[in-house]
Amino acid sequence: MKQEQHQSLYKDLPYNPVTDLDPVILLATPPTILTATASLPVQDVRGLIAYAQKNPGKLNYGSSGKGTSNHLFGELFASMANIKLTHIPYKGSGPAINDLVAGMTQLNFAPFPLVLSQIRAGTLKALAVTGVSRSPALPNVPTIAESGLPGYEGNGWFGLMAPKGTPRHIIKKLNVEINRILNDPEVRKTLSAEGAVPVGGTERQAAASVTQGIKKWRALAEQIN
Image (cartoon, rainbow, N blue to C red; front, side):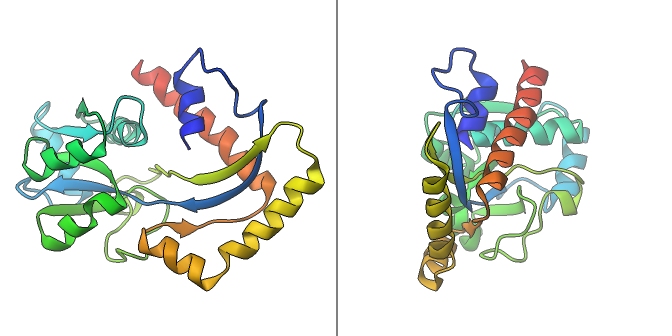
């Protein structure tokens, strides 16, 4: 997904993921969780939006840096909910999560592995997941779309790309073999332990994901300048 973001955010990117690379396959989608500090008096997305409307300018969210996935997921959320959230960029997710636990920030669109133990311990609240479906690792946590903000989707993904011009039979062979690997029970178990959902599919589906993502995040980048 970083390729989509970089193409949407940086004018001097030294490569173009559409013209310089051939998508092979989408590997997995790692869940991102809209997470709140324990002291924030909200329990779900509807409550969060209502709180933000009553307390304009009082909510901030940390991220691992400007232009990162969790930054853009937050901007998309604020735009669609028509609320004000102040972005606090950190030099990495670790420091951002530490300040969330400490209550220095109120929210984070956090990578699953970094907050799962705190959510289970009750030191952080899991309000919703950003993707189109619930995470098998946290089946009781709804998506943002189903819990107060229809149409919201903020998905990250891992994928495999090849240099542009790679022979089609090689790309096809890689695609078939990786699909086979992604269906292996042990591989799926390993991915699930990290909260990731295997994807697979065709190379055309992978290409469509890249082009659609660039269009979506470019529009948001232009909107927030």
